[in-house]
Length: 407
Image 1 (cartoon, rainbow, N blue to C red):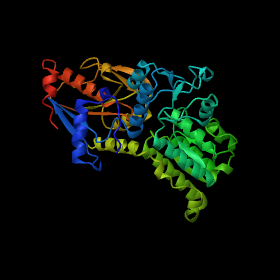
Image 2: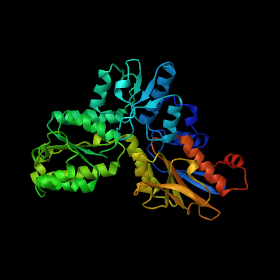
Image 3: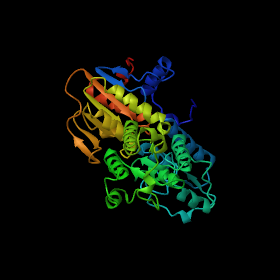
Image 4: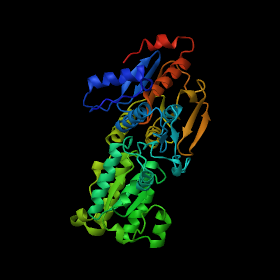
């Protein structure tokens, strides 16, 4: 696996030690059981896989390379590099400027760009329309294009499916940058439609079976289909791909459900003519992180803390999994932990930060699950762990306690 040149302040002494130990014990990454890290009277349960993935490290490396190689040029990020405020704030501290917000709203007009400017394409990729807009202005978008190779894999698979006459069903959040980019690339080659979840998939299934009317279909999918989408003609032959940060298990559930729909309509012997096998489009990093989170659910703990940006799709899915069993807190960093009792936690269901007064239990021995999303630096997880240790051992030196770390 390639080693990326990521700035040292993104690394961490605590989590770095855990990951190095697991790499020695399990170099092929086949064991999804978590690690236990004991500091003082707290046992932290750490998943086998979490934090920066290949695509994120690649994006960060290229971004800092752009900074070092172009000291006299204006450098722009098309939008947030990744969904982590600390990473984006640090890049902005070097003078990088966002052209758009995460919803695609323009912050700086494209017509203000010149061929001498540097534009970095984020890890999510971008739409064909924006690519062309930038190229028309003479902007080089290839040198520092940080689009994740696993996102590009989905695009390539979509192109091949389109060539074979399939309509693309994209499992994703329609407003998310990656889904907008994938939708743009897929509709170039095939009719395309976005489904957010099983609820929308069931409506789509009913449309395939002729249970819902055309009016009902467009009520759900009017703004989520490609131009000139034909109902019901474009639902005869389909393939499912996904926004790589969605729950892999949900993507598979959607695929299986639509496969059963096609069997019901056309019969088992005709199934290959009506739905493609697209399991190869699932991102390995998302799969590994989510599988490792399922491994956490096999343990007992007093609570769970998930660290990451609040607009991070993959991080919110980790919260969704963990809160099935544990009291789960979602923080962007240690600054959200105010005291032993008080914490600012992001509620993924209401999409707002809540101030809670039920954080650390008043007991001597604690077991706490700690994990993070694919866009979260390990250094932020370190700081969360240190803050918790400090709160639970107010009369002891954190430095001395960290020196007693037991793996």
